[in-house]
Amino acid sequence: MRNISVTCIFGVLFLSTVACGEVVVPEPTQTVREFLGATIIATTLNPTVTRSYEVTGEKTDDGELAGHEIVADGPALDEEELRLFQSIVLDEKSYIWGETKKCPFLPEYALKLEGESGRFLAFISFSCNQIKFVEGDLERLQDVDPARRRLRRLVSKIF
Image 1 (cartoon, helix red, strand yellow):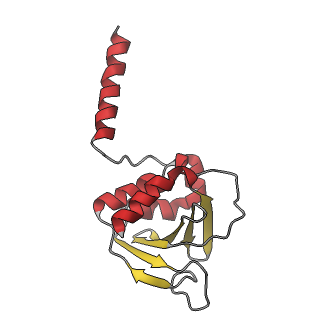
Image 2 (cartoon, one colour):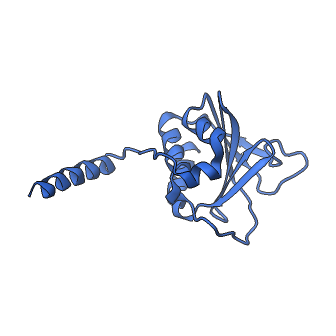
Image 3 (tube, one colour):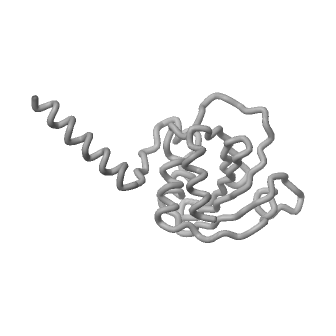
């Protein structure tokens, strides 16, 4: 009987959290830590500067952001947008691991985060449902089909 009561209490707390729209930032798993690396994780969790951009899909020699040209500057991320971004990129369930799509990566949006640990860019492509993290010369590309709706919600909040 006691187990049912505890389970019910946790269920009610969970449902009230979800119903209230609170975004939970997960603790990165080992898989996420290995994929993103310490700098991207630390900067994601504690950025001092956030920027958003609409970008061209195709890379050019003159591209200002890792080869992509800026179409429009967007605003800095507010606290809600930042938490949503954190909840997506730090969640192992946002990604499909071990698969590579054969479609070209053509991002529409980019986010730039800077902090004491470093800086990186996150390019978002809805044509392939992928996200690419660029930290210096290092690029990390991953399928984000499971997070498509949350990424769409994030982009619609920002732009």
